[in-house]
Image (tube, rainbow, N blue to C red; front, top):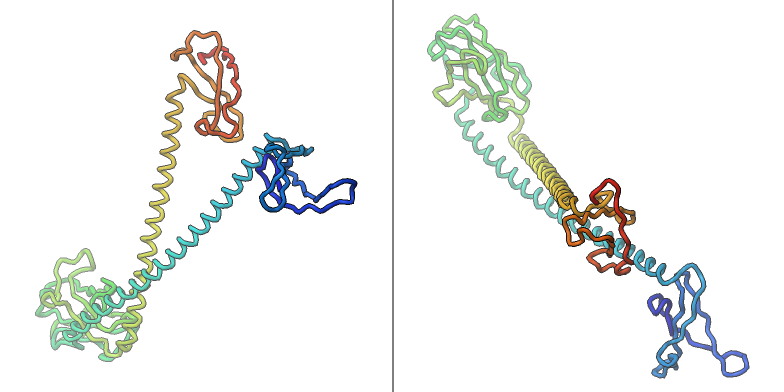
Length: 364
């Protein structure tokens, strides 16, 4: 049984076979890997009796490009590759776990939005149901719509008698309107013109009925939006008219719930994007702050020691400058430099000392 490179690489156990050589010779074949510079081995009987060269083991040098120092570099590279592989596997596991959590959270969020949409739609439905009880097709001597039977997307005339209203002396008449309890806010604006009807002071406006309208909502005013001063808002109750040939209620509320759900989803998406952008910005600012802090620290030592380049990268060569003027080495005829890496724990240990040379025209 044996291994390579001081028992540190690819151990093996082979059964020996008796040879035809003169004497009691036994043999086996051993494949020597390219990384080997030495074979280490002992003999044993397959149980508990060993021949280990008086506890020094047997060894055979291997000729090739590999030596002890090169093997250390090889092991370091192998360790780096293994760590890189483990890091990738861990990152992939974390990515999959994060994706699983994201999908679960998204599913929970979708169900929450669906429930919210149902509740919100039912709330609107109840409000519109109550509003419909107050709505009418016309009010004698106040307003009416021609034709009396109309549906969404129809163009109708809304007539208004201003004679006994707060707008009796208004020079202009405007309608400010919407639909379905002002669902989309102010969506209907039109100026009324004088009617030929003589039994009162009748005016009318042409109004395009919104596609999804179940109820029309409006007030009258003496000017367009943001310029009007006097309003007739039906004693603060607004005016409301039933749309006689509107789409079926159930069809409307199914679509309303779908649109509400879609809106909630979009709001959530925008909120999540904003949170993600904020997190990325925070991480970037932290990294930049860390880099600036390190540079400030290095520059704060520059009157004593610094490197060229200032940012040291692994695998590169740097020049170390040292100014002994403000240290215990001030005035010494020689300055020597000893170093290692990674808090003095690098496998190469402490490197041989190097004599530093003075820099012309410099304090370092």
